[in-house]
Amino acid sequence: MDYKGVVMKERTTKEAAEKLGVHRVTLQNWIAEGKILAPAMQNIGGGRVRLWSEKDIRKARKAIAKRGE
Image (cartoon, rainbow, N blue to C red):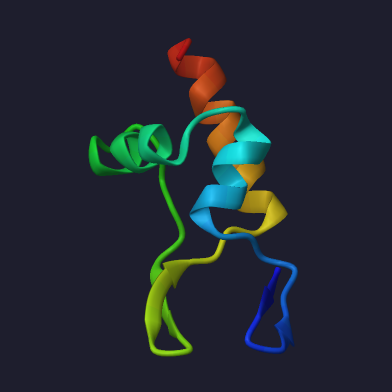
């Protein structure tokens, strides 16, 4: 991800959802329902975002598989 000139290895929730094969809103709903643990919100460039590491995405993928979603 390139956010205002800063190259990051972390991914946004939208990018994480794409890697997980689900829609961003679905991932956000699962987070709100407590089905998936998500990284904390961070303030970046005047906005609040979740930045997902590859480890976070792997954990989410395992949680999805366990629940059969």
